[in-house]
Length: 212
Ligand SMILES: NC(=O)c1ccc[n+]([C@@H]2O[C@H](COP(=O)([O-])OP(=O)(O)OC[C@H]3O[C@@H](n4cnc5c(N)ncnc54)[C@H](OP(=O)(O)O)[C@@H]3O)[C@@H](O)[C@H]2O)c1
Image (cartoon, rainbow, N blue to C red; front, side, top):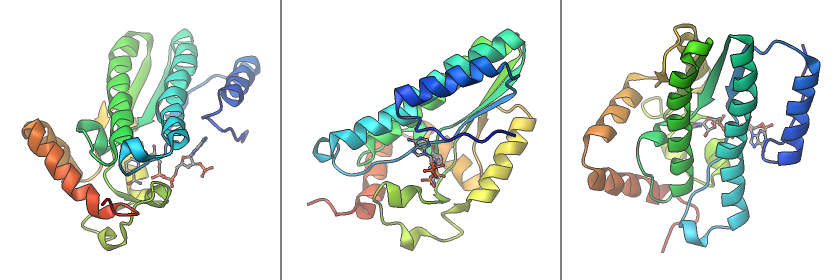
């Protein structure tokens, strides 16, 4: 087995990785696009370099990997792709606007590719977890300590296991946990203005520093 690190947000490093894969001639069976970061706060006041980094990692790198490796899989006549989106993909997310928009992109791209690649033997699934106990919120500069209960946060291991089972069943959209399924469903049913207001109200107290 080969381990290789890569800063996926650096286009040159990503090109190098893809070139190595091309030259290795290895059969590519599975691509998991998990890397992603979050940002929070008033978008227009955030450091642009962090927002750009989010776009480069959450969308550009994922799109390029799907293009290059998905293309190789289509040539091979088989393969499987799992893209990690989020519950955030189903709705707009005031105070995390760029992050939510990036995950909507991942969900839409994944579902589109699933249909395009179906007849080429490539299976595409997308994972949409809700709040999960990882380093994500620290990276996004959010305070979620009081939400760290079993009712709100899922364990990363549980989410990963559900993702693997979903992959085995070739599910299109994998939403771990019944609460998250309910949230994904209700955010699509509720009026858009109400969903925006509720999401804004939920996010605001989690921001560091709190908005004025
Ligand atoms: N935690 C949640 O509540 C939650 C909910 C829904 C969706 N998600 C999504 O789940 C995915 C995994 O996040 P997580 O919760 O596990 O957060 P995390 O603990 O912060 O992990 C982020 C992962 O992304 C990798 N990464 C970050 N920047 C990278 C870069 N420039 N190049 C390559 N890899 C990079 C990190 O690698 P290193 O460890 O090497 O830095 C790490 O493996 C993300 O796409 C996130 O949006 C998370």
